[in-house]
Amino acid sequence: MRKVMLTLLAIISFTLAAKGQDFEKRIDVLIEKAVNINRFNGSVLVSKNGKIVYEKAYGYQNVEKNILNSTHTIYQIGSTTKEFTAAVILKLIENHQLSLDDKLSTYFPDFNRGNEITIKNLLTHTSGIYEILRDRVAFNGGTKPRSKKEMLCFFYNKPLDFDPGTQYSYCNSGYMLLGLIIEKVTGKPYEQVVKDFILEPLEMKHSGFDFTGLQSPNKAIGYSKYTKTIKEASIPWDSTATYSAGSLYSTVEDLYRWHNGLLNYKVYSKTSLDKATTPFLEGYGLGCWVDMIYDKKVVSHGGNIFGFTGYFGRIQEEDVSIIILNNIFNRQIETIGLSILAILYDKPYSYFDEIKLMPNTLDKYVGEYEISSDYRVKILRKGNQLFIERNNGTPIEIFAYQDNNFFQKDDDIRISFKSEKDTVNKISIMEGLNTKKGNKITP
Image (cartoon, rainbow, N blue to C red; front, side, top):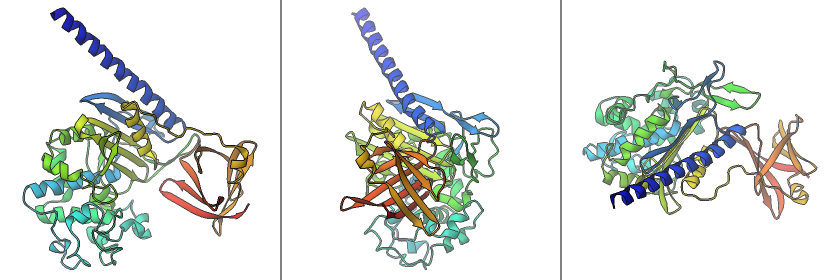
């Protein structure tokens, strides 16, 4: 009997090992495809059922010095910081130091309509507060240090976009106010509170805030443009400009410690985790997105900041984490994360798979489009291939991957078209953080 049991255990172990190898091979294929079309250059860690099933790094940490990325490479993680800010707020609620129903006016008595805005509104992006990054001065000055007074000036006295609690609109300003509330309640700098509550207890030794001042051989250079021929380094955003909405840096291994801390309720209680992962409007909870995918509750947050993008997704009930950090800018990093999720659950997925369109379909897109008075785009067809020509420059091939959606292979540029009455008449060109839109002016 004992021999039979040992044989069964051996078979189970072999099956699990084979499954793990299958995960690895399939994720390899996906990531290598993303690398080959210049949409990924970074580190990946994937775990399932308490075991790391994939951990690899691709590309360069520093192109100029010929340093390769590793699983120890340190990246800015942008808006994934919001999960940590929300966690501190929930911990302070557990400590009876504040409440989700507290009014903003409690902490900022003269804030416009602050008596109508709650901490929950700030956490769920339902406050109606003016978004700081809509201000061009704030947006363009992100690489320079900024005082908290300067930060507040960009949105403090602006009228609300809508009545609090009635709509969803992603708002970095709200999370900056949460950081200031944390400071008012604790009497400590926001960054120190995050260290005390999260980073130090979870031994996240390679995570912190002042990325500009960080001196580490593992620090990545961020790239705003990354093609076969162009590697354009970006100036990192200063932590005082992004503050509690996006100032953290980390590694895939440290974020795996964050996952385990949440998994084992070392950050806050199960009750608080349940509150955080209950979606309010538009699927956003308290510092995280909440989606049902393959009948699983997937909790995630991305991070987009010049030169860096990231995705942190997890399934609490099945101990799954997908952690992707990238030191080139790719707005569709989440697509890679969701494709990995599909692999883990043996589901079909599509990642920039080319589709062939008939010539008469391609002809719908052909024509000249005006983005602005000094920016015009032509869509040309040569045989069965479309090309984009910008301001009479060199035509570049574009490839269809969905109806009305195309991409370039050598750059993170996507082009989409819209129709009215079966006639294509609008174009959108997405490049990094920028989206340019225009109308067709000649067929």
